[in-house]
Structures are given as structure tokens and as C-alpha cells.
Length: 267
Image: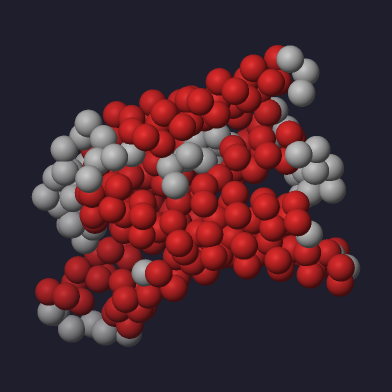
């Protein structure tokens, strides 16, 4: 249970920090020698749902109006803006989903290669380092259009690869389209909702094989992922607005270098 809680904390922190949660889970399971959960899809589902709940609760004031707008068809500017946000989120999600389905087997094979994951972490460092160099634009998330939302979806699809940060990629791609920094951050977080749901629904059947003891352990991991994820969102939002993501780039490069060194030495 303690190892599962530790993995939950790692998942919650790294799901939203631009350092790749999947990469950290692969490496931490490898170095912790956590054989029972290495490649365990049931645990992945529980931990990611913890992160999902953190987003839903933290951004409830942004998400609830979007949901309510589904039942409103007036021509007001606010309703139009909410509908546009939903269309663009669905467009980005569709692009990510198609690529994820087509390359599913190849991507899953990467989860067994800790060395490649370590290398991809250094790529994440490069992405988020240069995202700090991008100037904040003027576009809001309801103004980006379908082409730019599809472009952000490509960025999210790229991050399906373990070691590439989903939040880092989508924030960087959003900034590249000309979105405001604060808007890019919120769009990235809300975009994670269908992404996490879609990825986990494909593996949801794996939960049916769990016994009571495993359920208790995995629920502990769920709680740990939720709490750590919720706490880190606010901190990250401030750092994005101040263009301070370069510190995470340095962190990724350090973890990448240390992991590659340990793997070469046979650990």
C-alpha cells in the first residue's frame, strides 16, 4: 500500500506539472522494483481517475458553465463562447484519439523501455524550456478556431508517448497558436478531462479482475493522486503566467541524465 500511495503522489504531481506523469511512473516502478504494478493497467486507471477528480473540482467554476451551455441555444456572446470552447476541446480530443488508436500497440510497447522513456524526458525539457520563450498572445480559448485546436490536439497526441509531458506539450502548442498564457493553461487542464477518460475507458475492464485487498490498495493510490494533483494545480498556473517553466526543464534534464546513467550501469 505504501508503494501504491507513493506512486499516487508521483502521478498526482507529475500529471499536471510539465514533467510527464507516465514517464515518472515507468521509471519509478522500474527503480522501485515494484513488480506487482509494473505495467498494471488497473493501477494506471485508479491513479489517473484521482488526477481527473482534481481537475474537475479545481476548475468547477469553468467546467459547470460549459456543461450548462449544452442546454442553452440563445445567441448571447457568453453562450457562443462556451459552445466554441466545447467544439475546440472536442476537436483536439478527436485528433488525439485517432492518433492514439492507430498507434496504440506501438505506444504501449514504449512503456516497457525505461531507457527510451528517460531520453523522451530530455525532449520534454526542451519543449517546456522554449515554451517560456513564447510570448503570451491575445486569443482566448473560445477564439482559436478549429485548425488551431486540431494543432493543439497533435501536441497532446505527441504526449501519449511516455516521457513526453501532456501538459507541457499542450501548453506549448497553445501558446504557439497565440493564446494568452492563463487561457493556455486552463485549456490544457480542461483538455485533460476527455483525454484521461478516453484512455482509461479503454482499460476499464481490467478493474473487474481486482480482489478486495487490491481495491483497497489502489483506492489509497487514487486518494494520494487526487490530493497531490489538486495541490499542485494552483502553483503551476502561477508559474505559467510568470513564464517560469524553465525550472521544470532543468528538472527533466537532471532526471533524464540520472536515469540514463543508472540504466547503463545496470540498475
